[in-house]
Image (tube, rainbow over all chains, first blue to last red; front, side, top):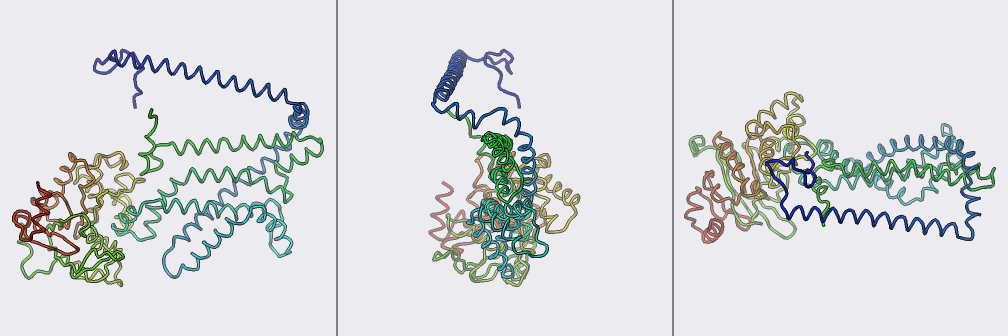
Length: 301
Length: 253
């Protein structure tokens, strides 16, 4: 666990002190590191200056600033857009849970063996094929406007519920494929070892294959959740007042596009923690199980 | 001890009779027969591709034979009406690449089969697992994950995992081939100790010196058949067949 002692530190174990060669190397590396920091600083500042000056000098800049970046309009629209975003967050949270459950069920249905399960297997395959191919916007329109139009008893009419349903239908197909890829990535020798112990097919799947598969697919899974959080904005086309819809209304009242920019910034702020979590999980050593050896292969010249 | 427990009229614990196995056009096992009597160690030698691993996988019902019969304790286990899971639970298998479950701690790797297959309660399964880990000298690693162990330690855990269900026979598929040379000894020593306890073993190996020490019988496999068989000293020291002589010379020089 001990971090390497700072170069030149006399507190080395066993009375070791760096040789002349090592001291010279360390000095060289430190000077290179200082130069790298300086170069990064200068190039960043230079580019920022060019961008800022370039944008300000552009002929349309005052108009762009007035219609996209008006601070007064931003401040005024922020409360309603934020309120709308809260709806997006809730829709996303509920849908994410449902998507994971449905997708896992679909992926498992496709791994079932035995003649009895043939129809289940076929159904799951057909479902994934269809809903992976259908544009989300079509599913939204069909479910959001088509279902209530049937005037069947018991069909929900809330735009939020119908929009969420469309999201779950579509995303389950994608995420099912992610789970299936994870299941197939577990090496057959793991199955052989489990079966040789007398475990049944189901026990092998539950206790040996799935735990390894799920760990491996967490990064791509979170990626799909980021995507879901953005697409939750599409329920606005069904009339639900989410962040996008709220921004649209504010844009119309102020005759100014700044509320859209406000909504965009909020969505980005919402997804950044999710992407950072994805990266952190992927880096965590041991998390990937048998593949953890790959994580150590960093920092080569 | 060997030879005293199985009289000449005794039925073998494991009997392979005329087994055939093909992968596509490639005939891997061709009318292969051999017996393993209780408390004896039978060693399979032969070039890569001679069918050693396939034979072990067929015996453990991980691969289906294309013809022939395999009997365990007098029962035809290749009969598709038999519960294959129950048969596999009667045998232990150790693989070349250990195949430990990377997401489970050492103790849980070993305790998994008692819990799921034999229906033992968790606490008792862990006690049993701990006892076997002590036997292979790794009780202090029970809380570790497999990738924190050396190759030799991992293979000893795999042996413990195969032993915990008290198998009638232990099948070992080149269990030292993936190990660094200095780690081979600890695994072979353990197998020697297991032989002394009277465990029945069928094992494939390229370690000729080990085969000489531990084998009651050596079978040289060639082209999917038992080309030559006999006591270790005879097959490895003074082989009758020219092919066996060539093979043994190449592996001992």
